[in-house]
Amino acid sequence: MRGADNYSVIVSRESLPQLPYSIDEIYGLREGKASGKYREPKRVYNEMYRIYSKVPIALSRPEIVITEDSNSGYEFFRLLFRDRCISANGKSRIKRLLLEHADQAVLAIVDGAAFGPEMQECMEIADACGSSMALFAPESFEYLILESGLIEVPKAILEETWNHADSVRYFSWEEFYTSYLTDISRNQVYQYSKHRLNHFYKTLGSVEKISRVLPDTIQGIADEMDTLMKAGPKP
Image 1 (tube, helix red, strand yellow):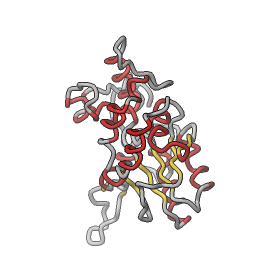
Image 2 (cartoon, one colour):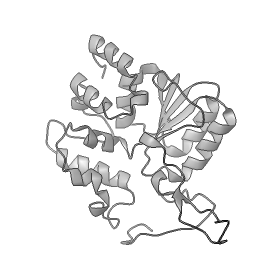
Image 3 (tube, rainbow, N blue to C red):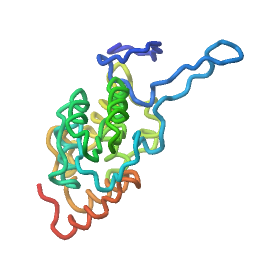
């Protein structure tokens, strides 16, 4: 699949952890009663704002916030959630941390563009635990920055990504957004690195602007922002 210049449709009941596919591209096939044929496929995970939860959760005040990222994305969300924010150091470890904090209100933040293989098990854990768990799955942290308007970006890059993310070069849209943001910010004051977050993105103005892109359900981050405005974000 890597380096292929075509789209592929894989019909399977199993997840495919070796492929970084999007949670938005998982479809279910249901048999039609009348015809006995499989009818039009429908997306399995398609709730508004890409917030996925089996149980309602007070997202504005989660007890634990788990980030898939251990670098720049983690640094940003730790500014907002402080000591409540922990890193899973990779998408495959999200499940283990969900289980470890099964008795708490948990918000997991993952890169939706490549989280498809982990999605079903994570949702099953949330369902089985019967506790307040939710996943926030933007395309990637880099996508949030590009969408925030902090840096001027042509609308087509975000709205018609399929016309720009050449699959020969990029194994996932997550890779594309990272590469694009890194390229357009090179040698600028806002130069982006996935490994360490530039101070530009930690200023109050930048944090506030990126935070506005987050869903309203977790923008009760207003409390967090008030704290930041008074104290200033810590590097």
